[in-house]
Image (cartoon, rainbow, N blue to C red):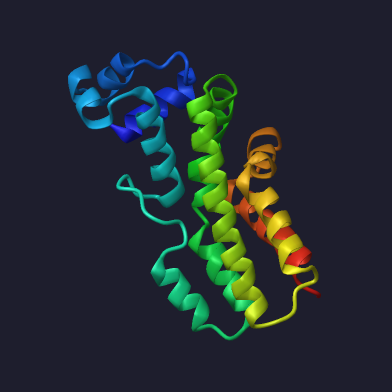
Length: 189
């Protein structure tokens, strides 16, 4: 259902997607969708969580496995590489639904609150990544500035979407460009 809902939201927009449309797309009854999700906002929340974590059951973006591997890596650049590799699929998954959420948040205060909470969690994760990088070497910026700038580049997928949509770059090329931009911002050459 989550995958079907994502396709509906991306193709038709939040306001045009009804529970009935989601149910039809998922080949289930509307009652089933309501029983599992209660309402359309909850469906959107599940879609966002699945896109962010890569798992329909949700979870954390920065999981214990990644944190363990990062803390076991003494080289700053290799730590950064671990993060970029672990999040390689993130922008491809989140970019389409992020635009839907932004549009819906402008008209729905509950979705706006959901977006603010997501932003807060993402910033917490970014601060954790930056702190981990600063543990093993100097940054070009203060940790606070580095976290703010990294968050701005990765939170909203405009950089990535501009390259993949407007310039027709591949996912890999756009993601690598983002990683290069972040590395140049964070580290001295």
